[in-house]
Image (cartoon, rainbow, N blue to C red; front, side, top):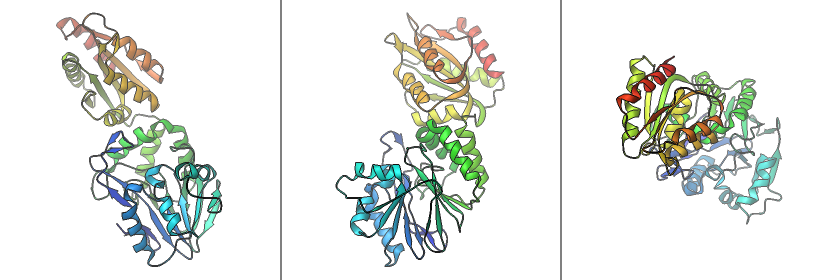
Length: 387
């Protein structure tokens, strides 16, 4: 793919429709894009490379866009292999090209490419440093822990373009036209969700810039209604709920807990809860469950007891929430156990380790199957969630 962003800046990235799992854990039914850009001026700069799996296609795009010119610089904003994986191919092909990166990234280069001598090939930059390409000037802005410690973003001053590294990225190849927010949200909370404070710091830096376009390393270039994207990122990174609603996440062994969870969802709907969503943690996409947990202001966890502890799909879900910094939510608990219910105790302990989580009472305890005896407690919990 070779696309003109402005007269001097071209998109040279590639789509990957063959990868089944992003970072070996996130399903990507519509693939993913590895974005890379080329700035043609008196000096020529490449903005990031791509995953080595797509290096041949990317190098073909690069050669076509260069039209016989030779790159002076490779700007490395992020060292993760899906963006830095083709660096060695460039180093071998263009021996005079200099690599521009943060000091931390320069130190990381030999970790990934131990057989390359980078001694005289790198320029380490720090906050506020600039690089003139002629009529274009690159300003480097450090963005540590968004979402690796070496990350920086780059602002092109003349055309007011922010090259945002993994910020504002999304799952989905560019050849698939789809609504931005859903897959961007799933990407954000699963990839960057833990790092709300560093992203807030970066957003404050971005607020001082006049931005015409945002060019991320995954997903489409953003050029219209930028306030919408910036507002969502501010909400997500401050851990505020995006919408009023309840996610009911259940993990059921033989169907009893699932039946109770669905009945509870109807109780909430009858009480006028704005949005009620359910997810089967044994079968549904875990990354989407995490996304929805962050999207809504309330959560119900319903799970079976298992081996004197908690059914593993629910344990995995709560562990993921812990890793991603889940906070500022109201949560209800439904447990099930045929002889010694203990799921609720384990779920409560895990939730209590999270920040600003209000655990609602009563906790509902099922004995194998939901019965009429469970209705008063379920209705009481539904009433608390509906407040």
